[in-house]
Image (cartoon, rainbow, N blue to C red; front, side, top):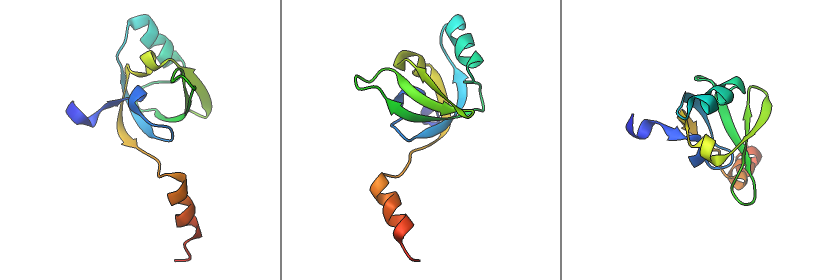
Length: 96
């Protein structure tokens, strides 16, 4: 497994990845999967509360907020971190 998988709790705002596994107690894992965090689902971190907990996620066309402790149990692959806003603005205004 190694460096290929990261937990959802480690992602910065704007990053996204694909769920590989939910590794927590069975009742919590079941509830998270009922809310759409199934293997193969693409999920993005939208915002984080001021004190760092909970995280707001975007998946399957809706917003979901979960505790950082629960997010730490969600393993992701194919993680992509969004470019900073200033870089995206420069790229959009580049006439090439």
